[in-house]
Length: 212
Image 1 (spheres, rainbow, N blue to C red):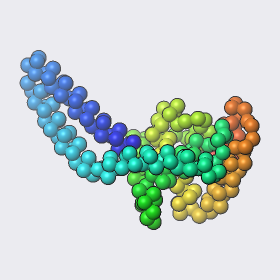
Image 2: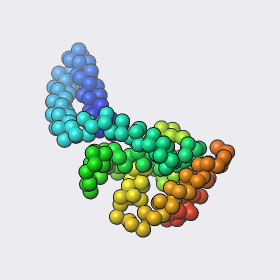
Image 3: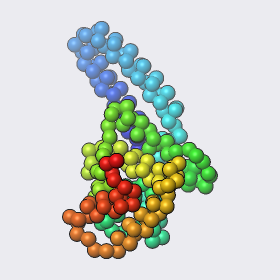
C-alpha cells in the first residue's frame, strides 16, 4: 500500500506541474514554464527509476492483500482468535502482516523483513512521524480512524515481528502466553467502554510498562 501511495504521489505532483506549466504558457511566463518543464522531466526520470526499484512490491500488491485477508480468516477458523471486541487491533493485523512477505507464504525460510512495512516506517522516520505505543495497543475497531493508518499498520507489524521473529527471544514465551490470554478473554462479554482499558492492562501484565 505504501509503495502504491508513493507512486500515486509522484504522478500527482507531475500532473500538478503540467497544469502549472500550461497556465504559465498562457500567461506568457516563458522562464517559469521552462523551469517547470525541466522539473517535470527530472521527476519523470525519478519516477521511472523508483518504479524499477520497487517493481517487486507493486507487482505483489494484489497477492499480498489476498494473503493478508486469508490469514485473518484462518486465525478465526482455526480458533487462534475469537470474534471479540477485546481483540487488540495491532495483534489481529500484525499476525496477518507477518505473512505478507512472499518468502513466508511461498514456504521459503528467509531472514528478510517485510519490505513494504519497513518502507512505511522509513518514510515516517524521515518525516519524524510516530504513534505512541499506548495508542496502538488500546486502539478499537480499525486503524483507519487514526490520523496516520499506514504508519499504525507498519508499527503493528514491527511489534508482532519483534515478538515472533525478532532477536529478542525473551519475548516469545510471553507472546504465546499473551495469545492464550487474549483468546480466553475473547469468550467473555465486555462493555465497549471497558475494552481499551482491558487491552492496555493485558498488554502491560504480559510485557511490562508501555512507557518504559
